[in-house]
Image (cartoon, rainbow, N blue to C red; front, side, top):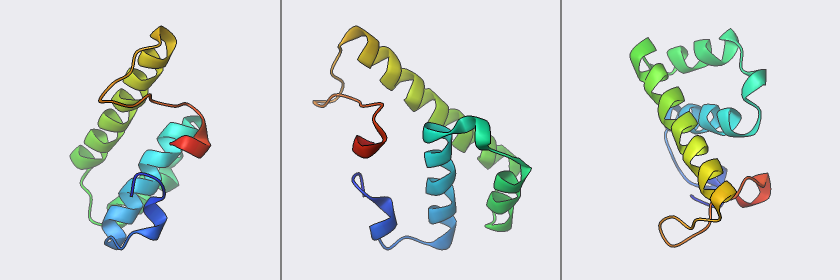
Length: 85
């Protein structure tokens, strides 16, 4: 799943969440109300959507700080390169 979540058998709800988290990571300025409505249509509440956005953003923040300092976390180096996310 770490290498390509689209190749893993997950529920449509989980896939919607993962795609939203990916968009936060790769192109956060492109997120629109349509993305949020898509999550709602998959059963997520507004609070759950906030949690997805917060956790995804925080993980990206920590990865960038670690990269800026040359720190390895959890035995591997976080990458900003989309090919290695």
